[in-house]
Amino acid sequence: MSDVSGLKFASTIASLGSMLGGVKTKAEDLAWKKRMIKAQWIGMGLDWPEDFDALSGTEQLKRLDKVIEVGLEKDPKKISKILKKK
Image 1 (tube, helix red, strand yellow):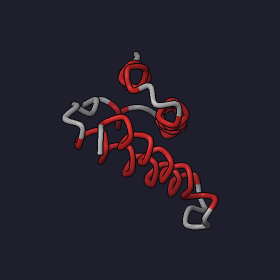
Image 2 (spheres, one colour):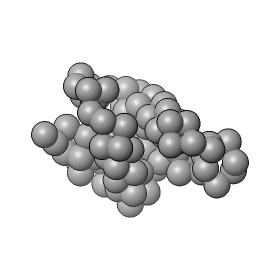
Image 3 (tube, one colour):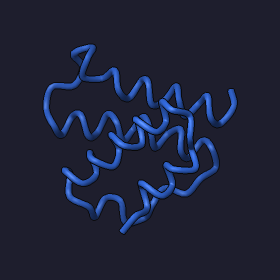
């Protein structure tokens, strides 16, 4: 699986969590999306931002939702900027 198609797959799975009923709270939504995106991100050989967990849950979820949106568009170059912006 290519990096781009893998990222699209991870984005699709991450976005399905709440639709399939497996995610009910904001904390579960954040944990699910983070787990799906982070696994693919690291699998692509990229470094996950060290300070990502220091962000508020709201900010993390906002960035992960944007990553999923961009991942579904197959543009991984934008994703690094979204996760790492200060």
